[in-house]
Image (cartoon, rainbow, N blue to C red; front, side, top):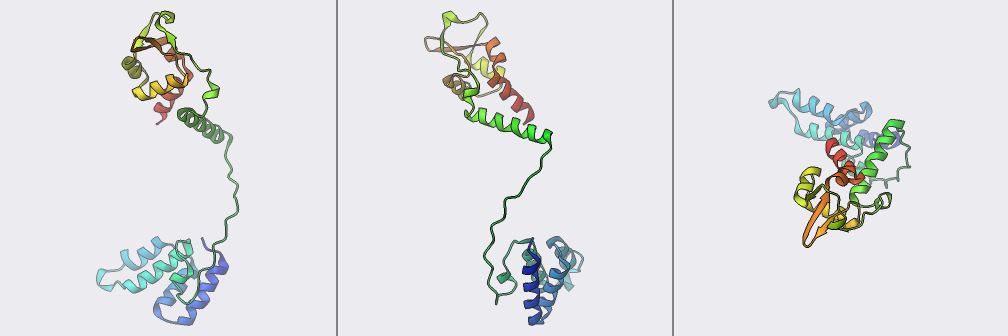
Length: 193
């Protein structure tokens, strides 16, 4: 939205033209009309044979100037656009519940990107002889979690989950997967998406 001083400058300049298009633009600026109002007034509510494209585009340009979409030179070619002032940093107010939800989402994103690895104790790669009884293969682990093989491999490479290896085959403990915080976060985020 434009400042009132900018709107007044455009109005004064447009009044000097004194043609139909300029008068329409002055009306739009003074009444602070929106683009949708202009469309309804000059297109939707007017029979096709009575429409005036010149007036519509003039009014639309004035509405776009009001909204800050175009500069003053678009409606007053004799004037130059003023340099844009940098907006001051605003303050956003959030409720406590919105803030907590935002923090949870941020933590989930950080964990998914691997930025919060320090929060989870890295799990070492272990030999299959140290494995618990209920081992499942990599494909079954992916189905259990609902993720791709690359995801589970990345977690294992980062030490977020423990993988057990026998030769070239990789296994995971069903119990450890279901108890893992990274898997819980992943499943929670899938439910919310």
